[in-house]
Image (cartoon, rainbow, N blue to C red):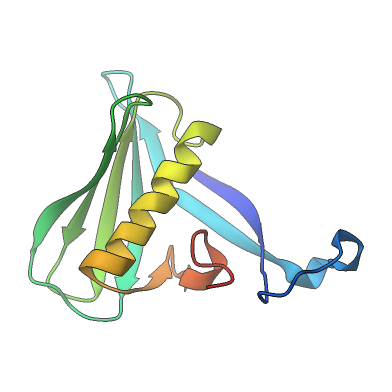
Length: 130
């Protein structure tokens, strides 16, 4: 399954909500998700990095209180996959901050992200308005 979100693009300026328009919206795509036999959910995010990393995986972020674990799989090319396992449905609101924290950790500590789901990184939190 694939989910779709709409993200407001910010130019970094304080704006009156009445001044927003449809041109400020960007259609984003959630990672591909599926329910596992165990009852948990697996989401796979396609990432394109600005630089290649050697093959391997790195544990990115874990929050046992909400049942969230993320791991990045480097392929030896600019392509990578962020694998997220969640206790509840993958698009449940409690997982948005943890997912965006995972993006930030990857970008700031491991390898700069160029694209998420083949879309510009800046369309996704936490990068909007950076």
